[in-house]
Length: 104
Figure 1 (cartoon, helix red, strand yellow):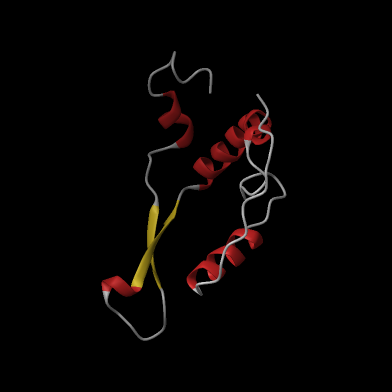
Figure 2 (figure 1 turned 90 degrees about the vertical axis):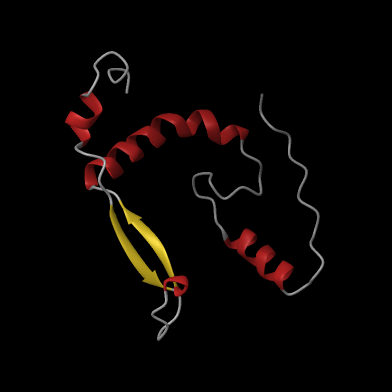
């Protein structure tokens, strides 16, 4: 990552062209309309690997600044957020978010 700013074109040489496979995923069976599908982008293995390496380097700096209700922390779960979304859609009152001290 440090070489990229000093060597133009090095990222494309290492990772290859920035071409992802775009797949149309149906939301429900039987409806072939465009509105009934969602796009799913599948990057190349090298780009996924580079993203994983990047996150391995960045995560220790970012995660201490995340709030407790965030799902992006290592080992985090989207379960709480999913339950809160379903409760909101059902019109149920939401619980206040937990109070968290954010690291400087």
